[in-house]
Amino acid sequence: MPATVAVNKPVHVAIVGGGIIGVTLALGLLKRDVNFAIYERAPAFCELGAGIGFTPNAERAMLALDPRIHRAFKEISTPNTEDWFQWVDGYNHDDTSDPDGVNEDLIFKLYCGKRGFEGCRRQDFLEGLLRLIPEKNIRYGKSIESVTDREDSGQVLMRFQDGSTSEADVVIGCDGIRSSMRRIMFGEEHPASCPSYTHKFAFRGLIPMDSARAALGDDKASTRFMHLGPDAHALTFPVAMGTFMNVVAFVTDAEDWNAEGGKFTAPATRADAVAAFASFGPAVRAIMGLLPDKLDKWAIFDTRDHPVPTYAQGRLGLAGDAAHAAAPHHGAGAGHGVEDALVLATLMKAVESVSVGSSRAERIRAALLTYNEIRYERTQWLVESSRVVGELFEWQDEHCGRDPERFGREIDWRSHRIWDFNVDEMLRDTEDQFSQRLRAGYSN
View (cartoon, rainbow, N blue to C red):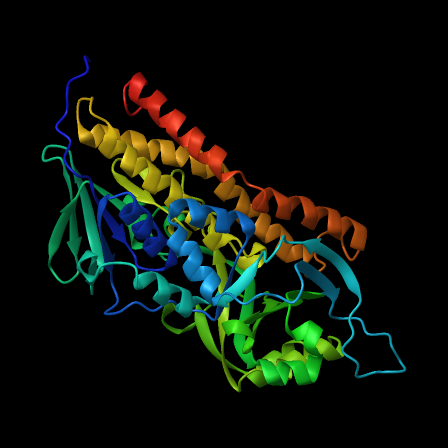
């Protein structure tokens, strides 16, 4: 087909879901002067969960997406007292001279880089990002019901549960692990439409830092630790500028998850957490004893068992947990979503900049196919590896068991595969592959 001159109208991107990934994508588009609207089903934004951390690759992606994202994170992230991530034996305690001591044997430590792998409270980060987005670009109370890619009109039609409709050139689902967009794209009966229980759950909570220091000492309370043991493990790190210690205590569960109403959370108590870690050493028992009396158990679901076959279908796309929900054991799921947002924002700007071609719809389809090609392998690897390291942390891996050297080798190469990712090279590959698709006929 001979090339024709196209009238360059602004691209309009619909973002379904206003969590951290949807909002970072919006800021990336705003930075590149690409029109967008966020459709959030809740009447107001609310990011669930206590703490979140970002690995070095995620910080580089933030800078490339919009430096204000990175600045918003650093303004509220809590520096660890050490730039090393430490994995310790939270189970065995052989010091008979100090049976209640909180010392734990070091299994492995890994350098995170200067101020690397810091944490913050999710809600604080989301609120900081939302202050950067014009209110006119946000639609609240919009629960997506159907999406139709109408080739004849050049627009994608969205219908919402309140009966309203809206149109856009492209629709990106950033609506999390229980994504409605994923079900719309692949159908209710497709195995990938629903995530799978990993047979682990987590108690999550915040402990006032004064209490944590009194029980554990300054060093252990104010930097990142992973406390390992058989069939359970606990992650601790400081948040809220050092006023709280965030605790995520994981437990292997042989049963199916059957919470009321299909929820991924269930009520729990501090006594439940204390009982689950009763056989662990004094440090871990002390941590559990400091948790709030009322807790939630968070079921760990992911998309490993039934991955989506693609993140792109026509002019519909998926990003973040909607595309590749991973168990949290690498602490890298949100960071990979930020990388997704960077690629998508780059491609939407490229679509708008192209001045030749048969139609904008074809260029958008080519852009989303490029996005899928760039992001699929890396993100699916993360989903798989997150399951693996969850087993490593609980001494369930047949090869490593409790061997510190084997454990260290596994953690080292897996972590560096995530952390050392070259964001600039990803963007060069994105631009090259998009250009090749345009030359080859747009959607091949």
